[in-house]
Amino acid sequence: QSALTQPASVSGSPGQSITISCTGTSGDVGGDKYVSWYQQHPGNAPKLMINDVSIRPSGVSSRFSGSKSGNTASLTISGLQAEDEADYYCCSRTKSGTYVFGTGTKVTVL
Amino acid sequence: QVHLEQSGAEVKKPGASVRVSCKASGYTFSSYNIQWVRQAPGQGLEWMGVIDPSGGHPLYAQRFQGRFTMTTDTSTSTVYMQLSSLISDDTAVYYCIREPIALCYFDYWGQGTLVTVSS
Image (cartoon, rainbow over all chains, first blue to last red; front, side):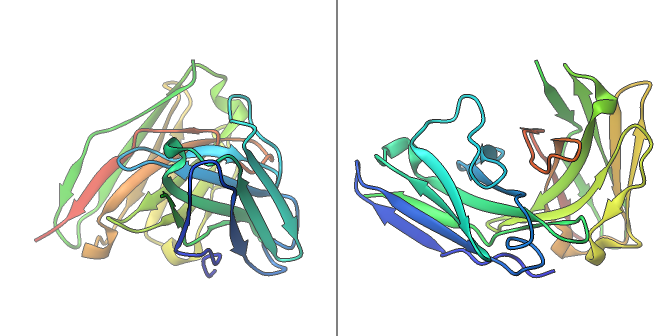
């Protein structure tokens, strides 16, 4: 199972919006609704930010939103803040019931 | 509150095996799957496998088939992972994670256990 494809890095100025893409296949991302996103600050465990493509768990800022079109899922961060600087990973269940993560995206706040 | 407490860092020689424990608390142990994910230094996340603590059949990533085993002890709400025939590329932080059964997302993560494989 190959990792889902994400851009290596995305940057933006405070207040701007950025979007991170996550491209897979019809056997994973395109197959069902089970795409989730995780934020990881250096030295910390990842944190769930989005589940089921676009559901925001309790406590996660409304500035984070998710969507999907075909085999590509996206995470948008609006009103970018310094604290958003981190690594972001997408994850999808596959048709065989296993899971696959994205390659990871480093978000830099300029 | 939900907490997953993992065992401490390990240093192993190539060819050896390592066992990492993950003790769950703050929720009904049998109602959630436990997933294992690892992260090599400076690298991304890699899914390893999932186990249903209530007795379901474990599911392993194909690349770890045959040398990765997950077991549960319901009496202590603990899940164990064992990785055998270690090589230097197995050096990584290993995370246990809670997954609401059939909901396919990872909501609580352990603190991670660093396993170093070095001769």
